[in-house]
Length: 503
Image (cartoon, rainbow, N blue to C red; front, side, top):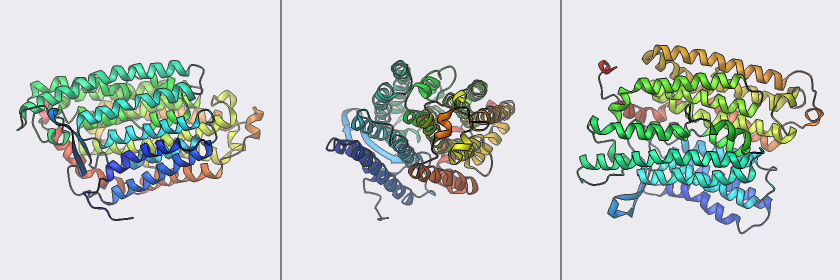
């Protein structure tokens, strides 16, 4: 790789490259050219993100590769980008996810292909911006920018009969969630600005986390951001959009929304560090929300007969464990949470990619239409089992390392909630093994299943790469943990402002 200095605007290049690719699409009318341009753009961006990792110093705290340019100087709002150990790995993971989205759409999208791929690239830019933004207003801009492409991707290319209703539901719910986030960020700008040296509005997150805010000013920030980010995490009872989206939307959106838990990232990045003492006082609330999501998602998943619907509810259960781990406010909890969120990006991408391949071949993912898949498509069935067990945390997959950290941290800080998490893992094994047994084994009753072809070479290349990542991180979890350790320790230090007596 070409060595780059810290002053090179690498983050801006990674951020804007998908937009350049989206513009280039309109110079070529052919669908084949559009998908190759999109894939090439994302692969190039993925290579640039590896350069980002190569130049990152994991022994240093704070943000690196920082860029800052005036945007709205009178309000102290700047174009401000940076990455630390918490956000760094989400950038290549997100780009790999979008590569999976393009490969999953390779032969599926025939209607308005240039618009489809342009929206995918626009969405990639918005999501990358969420992980790069250091200025809170810039973060909110990228956060809301995701709504436009997601709406049209669901409404125009959804595979369910109620796709437009699902698109409207998702958009309205996310607009509702955006309101408390905006007010929470503005409130933090006022309060942190009042204790900063400049005595004005403060939108610089990297400066906010160096300041101490009186506890009486933290309550509004915490609850506004907790409510807002809970919509997109999603936490019960704000979860209703996700199962509908997995059934009605295109497989590409299911991959993105289950693989990228942006709401959980928002809680870790903003809600808790900006109101550390109030957050620690309400550790019981976070633990309770995590346990409810764990159990509700597991019970709902066990009653599903459709693979996509089951994976949607399982996703809610899995993110509940992340919130439970975060509520421990210790190093194992936050490292396990970040590890598990990276796992979501890899494992959920693989699972929905494979389920999407099933839907493309058979026309359904309901178990009544399946049966005998392992006979006609042994590779697809084998990979489904691998990633299914990875989602359960079976060694030696990456899911085991992440869930072990989360469970130990939960048992140390909230013993009852930790025991509930162990019970939820039993539920997870029950619903996954049951639906896989019915859908993948047995006699072939559907002639379409008998005539279906196994994974194609391009599909095998992608899914093999994801499998290597899952097994590699499972065998060598230290490769990831050493990248996040210093930033995680800094996060815990800020959150641990109260004595254990307050618990």
